[in-house]
Every structure is written in structure tokens, then in C-alpha cells.
Image (cartoon, rainbow, N blue to C red; front, side, top):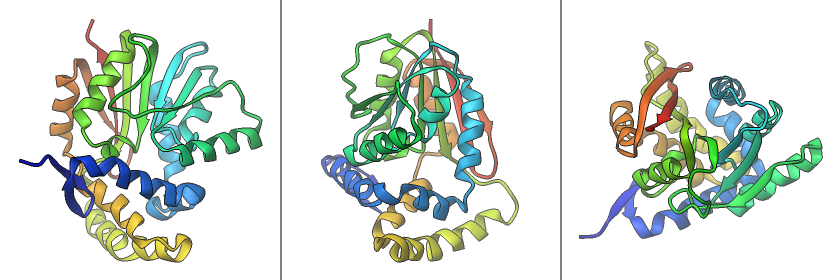
Length: 243
């Protein structure tokens, strides 16, 4: 039996997902901020600010920012004095982040191309692991979670920012219309790329619901998992390493 996984709007062979997701992010890398503005109506900046406040990065802490791409989360944590390694499977995204860091005069970050499911880092070296809007893009979420657990120090912290079920009355219907009809057209107009934007929207819809995702986190070895709504359909998940 073939191992099939979700690729947004369709199921595909698991062996194809990494390459196809890579194509999506290579297509949107140069206009990533515009893409985020289009998909979130500009709210992604506020979401990321609140996420970093949950993480509470401390001076000197070693933090792995997985799927960190263009550096949005890493820049915020580095400003708090943390020592941040920015990792992403897509080199085009990392290149955009490196260029942005140079333009802003931000140095001291480590940039490393990594597959979240097969990290090359040694075990037990990071105080915290963050991943924002990236876990849904991996082929096997359980493998990525186990790798996060492996590279964290004993007592380390895992933080994930991701979309969830929207609870506001009437919001889901309005966002369905916006995302189904308008976001792909915005992608086509801005980047000439309707399919990539459709994938990004549909990957949100097909992500496991929060109870299922929480179960996966605990199965990876984390305890004390807390799910904290940020606003609308987003959650920040904080899990402590099982000592």
C-alpha cells in the first residue's frame, strides 16, 4: 500500500510532498511578506509578536527556529538576546532571510538548511524549539515532533504556532469565502501563482484538529502541553520536555 499524505487540495504519494512543498515556497519566497499579508489580512505580524511573547526568549538561550525561512520569528527572539539558529528545508526562503538580516544590520544568527524530520543537530543542545506556520508542511508530523524532542535539552520547551478551528460566530463562513475565492486570485495577481496560494490555504484546512495534534505532541515525549488561543483561528502550543 502506498503511503499517501495530504498536499492541501489533494492526497499525494508521501515521497512527493517534500519536493512539491519546496516548489511552493521557492515560488513565493521573494514575495513572502506580501503572501502573508494577503492570507491574513495583515494580521500575521500581530500573531508573531504574541507568539514570541509566549516563548519568552532569554539572553543567551539557544533556540532553534524551525521553518524559520525569512527570519520573522528569529529576528524578534534575537532582539531579546537569544542565540537563534534559523532552519528551513528551503534554501530560497533562507536566502531571503539572510538578505533581510543584512539589510537590517542583524548579525549573530546561524542559518542552516534542515529537514525538520531528519535534523543533523546533536541531541540535547537547544533550550527551546519554535515552529510557526510550518508543521503542517512536513511530510510526517510525528517524525518532526520526535526530532524536536530529541534536540531539546532536558526540560527544554517546544512552541508551535498554527491555525486551528475558528470559533468566532460567522468568521469561518466569511474566511471560507475569502480564502477559497479571493486568496488564490490575489496570488495570481501578485505572484502569477494561483496554485501555490491554493495549497497554502488548503493545507490549513486539512491539518489535524487540535485534540489530535495535542495527542501527537504527547506521543513524541512532551508533557505539560498547553494550548493557548491567540485570536481567531490560531493557537500557540507550549510543551515541556519530559524529564
